[in-house]
Image (cartoon, rainbow, N blue to C red; front, side, top):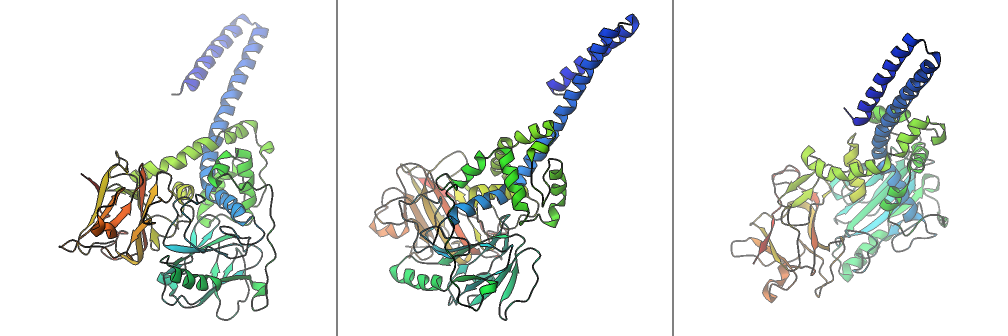
Length: 495
């Protein structure tokens, strides 16, 4: 029993004794005071109970809402420009990222040096948008489409739709109508849509040029303008949008009232899924009803108090899932590598969805990509540039993928590591030097392993570093990471 509850029981017992004594002495004044005190205690106990219940519901609701709120703040930051620029573009306009992130660009953590991004933010709540993708001529590409809850509701790409020219009309909730011939309908469950396209690129000048030509042919137009001359209007810049603070920090800084007010507003065009009905029923207890505004002032004071206390414990609960999720089976920790194959589609696994939003917003379905990460050779040790490591692949046991794989080196803050070779990854496009038995050793260290082995060298920084193994289109039949019939080799420290 909690101390507060025990104290309440003791107080009530004393009051009951007083009442019994008062009745014998027929002391009306004392009896009246005792009855009032008892009523006050009872009211406080009931209020505390309502506050506690509201707090628990609000914590669940916060976790449930986290992806939608985060997506909205991300959208605001990434579209708050008049015209497309290096990393941003207005709503409905195509952002074409032309190079891998520069070595000194710390805008985005864990950047990749494998693909060039082609990104579009859309609002399909008013009318559909038609996205056109050119003939990729056999090149690997992936254009996942995320709804406001971060679910990948469609994932056109080489794996699923082939590499020929494609056109898709992304329609919003409740839309019905006729589409042009040759245009495939993709139904978005929400008004917010994030098309997070990736096109494979080797990073050479010639390949940059080839991919740029493909990016230039990607287009997005509202259905009403399809087949007609179309020029998008300049984007509207909102000076109130915080363009400096990281989105996750912006979300975490919101108090409960601001957070749930925004969430309720977003629900109007980004409705809950049918399977969310139990959560929707719970949210009604704290004044959150789809289609209606949230007004904390209308709440019972005790309920409002409970809701106000929810954000911090909810944030802690989201991040704690990184450890608890391993026990639950949503994450795997094997040979020093942490990864999950439960991304892109989450159902009612709200903590998993919230955590992936927090640490890897925009994650693909596992059939498209998996991103194992390692901070050390085992759970107790961290990688350090003062030591040398080897990652050994037996003959025929390189990462099994149908797309491509890469091993990326990051410093302790998940940014590229400057080095004399300007090499940030090792991948299947490298020509590795094999051992006599056909196996391959990758050397992960600060100093060169020697000229004859530099083809297998991934330069490390002086201090702490992190490794990420990207597997695009991992095989679904053995050997496969997806069914654990292929295991990632451990990274071993060597003398």
